[in-house]
Image 1 (cartoon, helix red, strand yellow):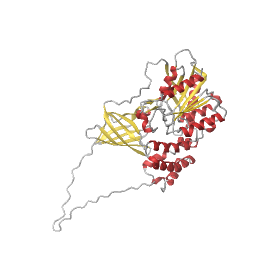
Image 2 (cartoon, helix red, strand yellow):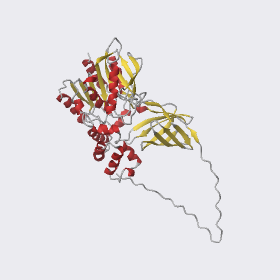
Image 3 (cartoon, helix red, strand yellow):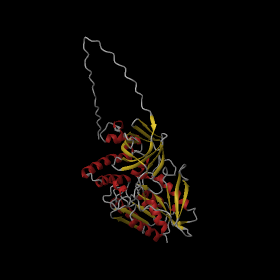
Image 4 (cartoon, rainbow, N blue to C red):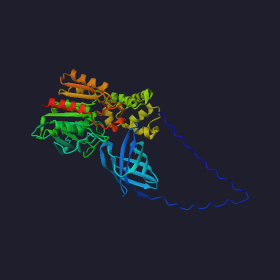
Length: 474
């Protein structure tokens, strides 16, 4: 991949002066005062166009004092602080310190729209917003609404293994005397809130509600660095997040309303990778596992097939899919083998035919840097087979047959075989027809459909999970 920068040069030619006349002195131009920066006001709602063509909604709430707050509704992030929000003429600048990003845009003459670019981590993405009286809400009919026939308690949990990690969450307990069986929810990749909110789909809240009505307690926590939870993410990997889950299991064993012999795990996507890590350790005493779109093969293989499947589901054709595979097969082995981010970036740039990392355009640099962080390096290298082969508790493994992120054909049979070959006699593996990575009924399985689908989680899948857990915790 090469980038060519074309510079357009404009030459301004002045008419020649007559020889017999003296050259007139240039008239001094009147000084024009630069427009002053003024605070932005109002609520602006719109979306970032991500490199994979997905849309990520954003909301700016300007306070009229030069700052304000922002939301990322699709990620469950709300009321985060803006560092600045100002307009200089029609030019608008919005910045955030944590996490660091910047928006540079143009304000329309009527001040009702903003168009520009959102920049983060070297990546520049198109973004447009409109001024609104209130933020629009997506229709999500499955989201639980009070009053609830069960008790919820806000809890705070310290990770004893890693200093500075505090997990904030919700403990849901059914009515009655107890002690109750309990599940711990483990989210997928990226920092998720306790409900695993994606495009306002709160899948963990939906599952927790159903389980509570069946007599099963649950604990769901904001990931470290998300919601009310705290913790360093710079060097965090799936192994780090596994210690967060272990802290939650240990916490539950101290609660009188929870049966310590009947604590299980429900892990989605990366959470389905983490759950067997814990169950493989006898000291954790995990009673059962539900793996929702969990990987069964090493991360590098998952990512390559994911890239191809997403391209095909998006309708881009075989040629684009083949090109995507070729690029992945060049870059991923480098990211897997080289732990040093700078060296990995340099090698990947050369693999793409450039002189080195310095020749990368900013947009490409930002995308490649996503392959060089510690989390990704661990994921690409991690093989779930050894942990799965040590799991002796009952396991329910589910995948949607239209999942384009963790493909059912690639992972589900491997998970089932590893468990059964190791002597686990309580294994149920099901490929659910018509469901995507979020367990929604879908047309293509493309991630671009997630936000458009009203269904948060297939009722049939919810029933399967609930009945399976109840049967194994009587």
